[in-house]
Length: 153
Image 1 (tube, rainbow, N blue to C red):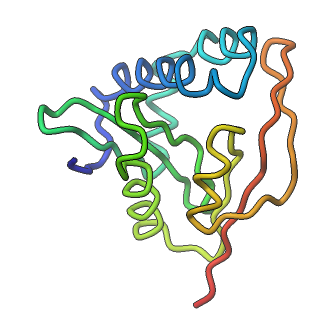
Image 2 (cartoon, rainbow, N blue to C red; image 1 turned 30 degrees about the horizontal axis):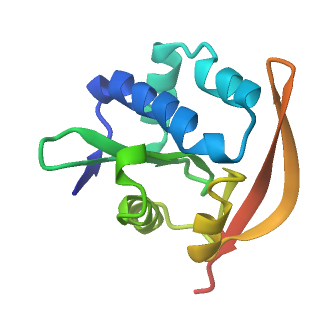
C-alpha cells in the first residue's frame, strides 16, 4: 500500500470506489432502498473534485497503482469522506488514512458523521459518539453518528 495526495484524475475512480463500497460494505447495515439512494445519487464530478481539492485529500493505492481507499479532511478537523474498497477491508488502509490525515491536519478536535457500518472502526481509533444523527437523502432517512476525537497536547 502506498499513500499519496489526491490528484484531479483520481476523481472518477474514487467516485466509482465510493459507489461500490456503499453497495457492498454498507449493505450490511442499511436497507436496499437506502443503499440504492446513497450509492446512486447524482454527484457532479467537478463539484466532487473541487471539494477534494479544498481539503487535505489522500488516496491509498495498491502495488498496481489502483486506488483502494481515500479520505479527506478540512482545516477544522472535519473528516468528510473515508472509503475503502470492499476487497481491501480490514487490512489497515483506513487506519493509514486516518493517521496520515491527523499528522497533516493538526487540531484539538477531529470529527465526522459516521455510518453505522464505520462506527466500530472509528471507536477503535479513539473517536466517541457525540450524538446519533439522521440525514435525509432524496426523502430517505439514514441514521449515522456525529463522532469526535479530542487531542490533548
